[in-house]
Image (cartoon, rainbow, N blue to C red; front, side, top):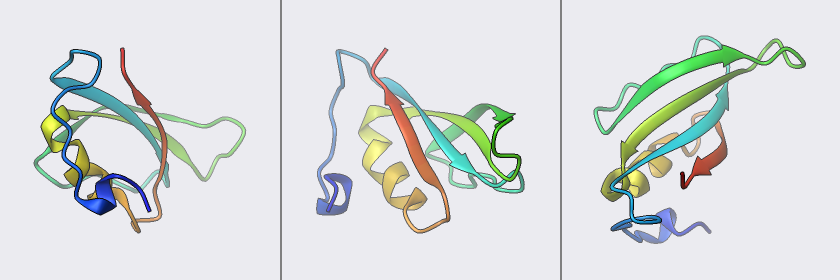
Length: 82
């Protein structure tokens, strides 16, 4: 069970109030919650049925974003701590 599933809330990560994360999803996938914005997406050349999406959110919303991504046929690839 992940920290976000245990309702752990993050205050800051490496001194930052915003954080970026990359997720792998189908090209038709869109994040439709208001707690994060998609910066860009790019196709995966080795896996044409997947696309890398980079989202940015406030660190204080990270738990909610991770929980929203859970079960949406999306894989969190990386959380960037700058």
